[in-house]
Length: 175
Length: 99
Length: 349
Figure 1 (cartoon, rainbow over the protein chains, first blue to last red):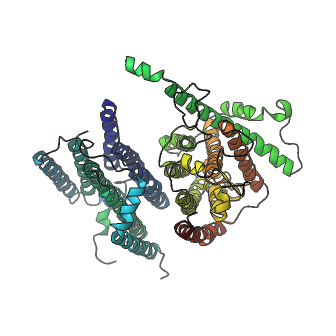
Figure 2: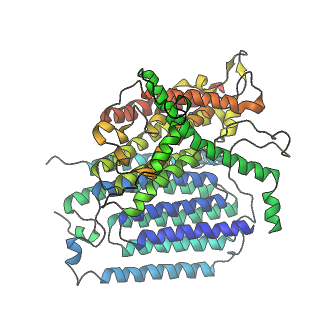
C-alpha cells in the first residue's frame, strides 16, 4: 500500500519533470527525448491504475512510433536551436509581449483547473476502493468491437485521411 | 491512492502542455506540447475508468492515441513543407497568408 | 525493516533473484558464444580455419576481444553531442537486455521441492508479455538513431536514418505475425502460448504454431532479421557504402555495448520465435522438468540459421528492402492475419 503511494510519486515526478524539460529548454531533440521519458512515467501510472494494456500501448504507439517520427523529422531537418536564427533577432519590439501574455494565460488555466478541482466533491475516494479493476485484454477487445464499433471504424477512415494528407503535404512539388 | 491525486497530476500536466503551446517559438515543440496535453487527458480518463470499474476510460485512450498519431503525421508533414519555404520553425515566420 | 528482511529471504524471492541473475549473465555469455560461433561458422563456410590461437580451438577468442576493447582509447568526435553520444550505446544495451525479461525458458518448477509452489522459469510473468517484448524492442531503435545523430558524421547519420526507417517498416509485419499467434493461442502471455503448443497430432507431429501457420513463422523470422539489422538486411552498417553505419565514430567499450546489444537482440528474437512458433520447452524424450534443454537446442538451431543466412545471402539494395517490406511482407502478413482469423472463427484452430 505504502509502496503504491511511493510509486505514484516517483512516476508522477518523472512525467512532470519530463514535461517541464520538454518546454523548458531550446534544443528540440532534447525536447523529444524528455517527452519519451515523461511517457514512461505515464506508462508506470497506467500500470498502477491496473490498465497494463494501455501502459504497453502507450509505449508502443507513443514512444515507439509517434516519437520516432518526431525524432526523424528533427534529424532530417537538422532543426536549429530555438532563438538562434536571424529572424528571431529582427523584431526586438514585437517579440517579448506575446510570450508574456501566453504565460499569463497558462497561469490562468492552471488556476482555473485548481479552482475546479478544489470544488469537486469525492476527490478523497481511493481509485481502487469502490469497484474491482477491469484489466483483461479480452474484455477490452469485446467492448471495443461491440459498443465502440462505429467509433473504431471511423478511426480507420481518420488514419487513411491523415496518411493521404501527410503524403500529399510532404511531397516535393515539381514546379 | 485517492482519485484527486491523479486528477491534480493530470491538471498539472495539462497546464504544462498549455504553457508550452503559449511560450515556445518552435513548431515542433508546440506539437510536443499538444501531445503532453492529450496525455494529461488520457491519464484522467484511465483514472476515472479505474474508479468506476469500466473499460470505457481505457478505450477512449486508444482513440486519443489514434488522433494523436494522425495529428503528428499531418503536423510533421506541414512542418517539413513550411521548413522548405522559410528555413525556420518559428511560427512567427509564417504570418503572411500567401507567398 | 524486519518485514523487508523476511521478504528477501523467502524461497520465492531468492529464486526470483537467482533467475534474474542467471538470465542477465547468460545473455552476456550468449553474446560471447555468438561472436565465437559467427567467426567459426563463417570460416567453415569460406573454407578457412577461423580463430584457433587463443585457447583450445580458439575458444577464448571472445574474451581476448573484450580485453582488447577495454584497453582501447575512448574516442569522441569534437562536434558530437556529449550527452547523447554517451547515452546511445547504453540505451541500445538496456533495451536488448530488458526485452528478454518476459521470455520463459522452461516449464514451471518447484526447484527440487525447495519452493512451496511451482514458479515459472522466467524473470517476469506478465500477462501482456508479447506486447511488452514488442514495446521494448521498439525502444532499441532510439539507441541507433541517437548514435547516428549525436556522432555528427555523415555516415553515422545515414546509418541511423536508414535503420530507423527499416525498423519502423518491418515492425508492422512483425506485429501482424505476432497477432496471428496471439489469436490462435487466445492469450498474450508467452507462458500460456507455449503451453497451448504442447501435445502431438497423430502421436508424432508436434502441435507447433510453425506448422499451423508457416507464413506467419516466415514473416516473423524475416522481420526479426530486419529488426536486428542482420544480413541480408544489414543496411545501417553496410561496410561498403557507410563504413560502419551508426557506430562509425564509436570505439572501445561504447562500441562493445552496441556489439553486445546486436547479438543479444539476435538471441532474444530467436528465443521469442522458439516460444511463439516452435513449442518453447516442449519436446519428446526429455522430461518436462528439464524442458530448458529443448529450449536451448531450438534456440541454438535458430541462431545457427541466422549465421547461415548471413554468410549465404548477399545484401539487398535499399530500395529493394523497402519494397520487400511494404509490398510483399506486409500484404502477406495482413492476408495471413485475415485467413487465420477466419480459421479461428470457423474451424476453431
